[in-house]
Each structure stands twice: as C-alpha cells, then as structure tokens.
Amino acid sequence: MKSLLLTACAVFSLYMNMKAQTPVKPEFRAAWVATVSNIDWPSAPTINSEVQKAQFIQLLEMHKRNGMNALIVQIRPAADAFYPSPYEPWSQWLTGIQGVPPFPLYDPLEFMITETHKRGMEFHAWMNPYRAVFNINGSSISPTHISRIHPEWFLTYGDKKYFDPGNKDVQQYVNNIVKDVVKRYPVDAIHFDDYFYPYRIAGKEFPDDAKYRLYGNGMSKDDWRRSNTDSIIVLLSRTIKATNPRCQFGISPFGVWRNNDKDPHGSATRAGQTNYDDLYADIVLWLKKGWIDYVTPQLYWEFGHKAAPFDVLVDWWAQHTYGKNCYIGLGIYRAGSNEAWKDKTQLPRQIQKIRNTPNINGMVFFSSKSFEKNPNGWSDSLRLNYFAQPAPLPVMP
Image (cartoon, rainbow, N blue to C red; front, side, top):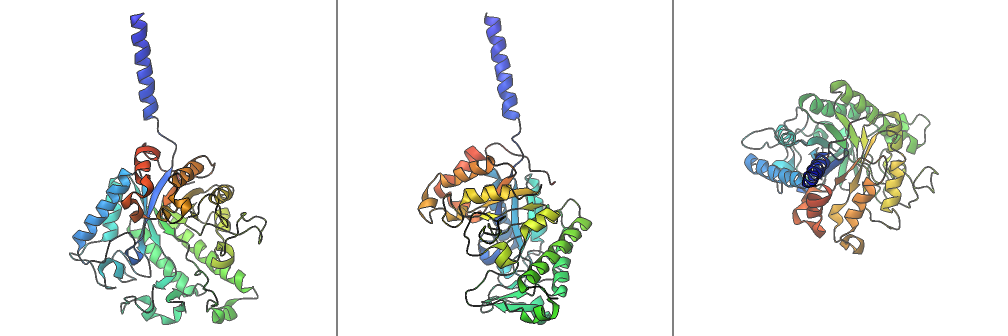
C-alpha cells in the first residue's frame, strides 16, 4: 500500500510539473512607449545619452517584470528621428532642440532594439506618417527639417502642420523613411497609429481643395481621400516585405471603423468620428487585401459605454480580422478618470473578454508611464496573475 501511495504521489507530482511547464497559448502582450511630448520616454529632453539609456533600461525592466513580451516604441513622432537618419533631424523630445544629437553620440534605436531583444521581447518601431510640426507656435524646427526644405508639401490645420496625403512626392518620401529603418535595423514591425488624415476640428475643413481639384478624377472628396490613404498603405506594405519579409506591418486605428447607422457592416456604436468617414482610413479593406499583418484597434472605453461599449467593439473586431492577428488596445491611462475606471475589476474584465473571444490574439496598453504608479493595483495583477506565466508571441499569418 505504501509503495502504491508513493507511486501515486510521484505520478501526480510529475503531472503537476508537466502542467506547470506547458506553455500558454500565444498572446501578444505589449505597451506603447510614446516619445511625443515626452509622455513616456525620456522623462524630459536631455542631451545626456547615459540618462536616456538608464531610463529606457528601467522602463524595459518594469515591463519585463510585468510579463510583457513586446514594446511598441515611437521613433518618429513628427518628421523627426530617435535615431541617426539620413532624411530627418534628431527629435526635440530626445535632446531638447531638434537636430541636436545626444552626447556622447550613440544610436538610441539600435540600443533599444538590442536591449529589448536581449530580454526576449519584440520591438515594434512606431512612426507617425503625416504629422510634421506638432505645434506651429512652439515646436523646435531644425533648418534641415523637411517642412523647411519642401514647404509646398505641407498643410496647416489647427496648430499643426501635416504632410499633404494627396501628394505623391510625400508618399514616396515617407516610403523612403520606412525603407531606411527596415533595411538598417532588425525591427520586428513597423507600426502606425490612428493619425492619417487628422481628426476633424469643428468648423474647420482640412485645406486640401487645391490638390483635390487637380487629382480628384471625378471621385467624391471622401473617396479621393480614402484612395490616397490606401495608396500609401499598399506602397509601404510592398516596400517592407521586399526589404525584409520577416518584418511585420501593423496599424493601430481608432477603435470604430464605422457606425452601423452609416453602414450595415459597421459596429453597433455611435462614435462621433470614425476611421472610414473622418480619418479616411479603410482598415477593413487593408485587412481583406492582406496589406497589413496585424491590427490593434484602440478600445479605450469601458463596458457599457453609451457610444462605444468595449465588449461590442471587441466582438466586432473579432469578426473582421480576415485571418490577420488582432491585438486590442487598452486604456490603462484612464484609471480613476470616471466611476467606471475607478472600478478595480474594469481592466481584469477586459483582459478576460479578450482571452475568451476567438480571433483576438493579445493586447497593448497605453501607455508605459501608467504602469509606474500601479493604478488600481493593475501592474501587480499582471505580474502576479494574468501575465505570471510567459506566453509565446503569435506567429505572423
């Protein structure tokens, strides 16, 4: 009897060890690291390269402890660079003055990729395609900035300058920027956010009438704008794959493609602006055509939100992935902002919803700095519970 008991205990122990070592299913777990306005890194502009490095290592170690397996780092916030670029000046948010390099001179992008990969994490290079001057009244603008070299390429809207999306020279320029990064650096992905055509400003029309009159070719202005956005996505998709077939191309759109009062294929939402109708970004088409490898819709709303309920949108995106990976963007920065986000169960319930929904392959948190204060104990929840067991990264389809 004693022998049988010992055998049973040994078998049970072996089973539990095997179970503990069984890898969880692939899941993308990432945080956005925003550099624009020094939201996340560096904490303030500094010429000191050692301070920059130390802060990034600290940030990276925090996310590794919390169970992340990828970072999405903004390396081109406004036609500037967090790396030595042959096309664009050093970013003002790196050193304080646009065009001034860090000292001692080093390559921040190479450093960040190396340190991220060293920890078994993917590095996705986040770029803003069309924002060129963040604030026309206060931004540091280098004499070598493209807005000074080709002022005819730009349109002013609100307090910002944007590349003209209808200009083919602009599209080729942005394509050259992306190709240069993919060719010179082992980035795991090129990542664009939701800023294609800018969000509407009440009472102001985006000033692209002149280009529309020249190149509209009988299309409505809305269709013409969408065709401009489609064309750069196609161009970039082909360039990325031709330069490095292993590099992914991901888009993080605004959370609503289209409301169903405008389109029966849209979501049961009432968003004030949408990708298709206001930002002229037809994400669904890009997924259908295979022009992008993954999509990360920004679902920064709570369960039960009046205009854009979280669960409704997760289900909608799950039905519109067209075989591509879909990672949900989560608004951890909203912790404590209203009654819904004071609820400590809000984020855990969102994670459970993601994990229980077919065709959803992971999540990305906005943004990195939010984790420093452990809002609602959510950093602890990830480290000790939801991300306690490492997960392999999803395979690119």
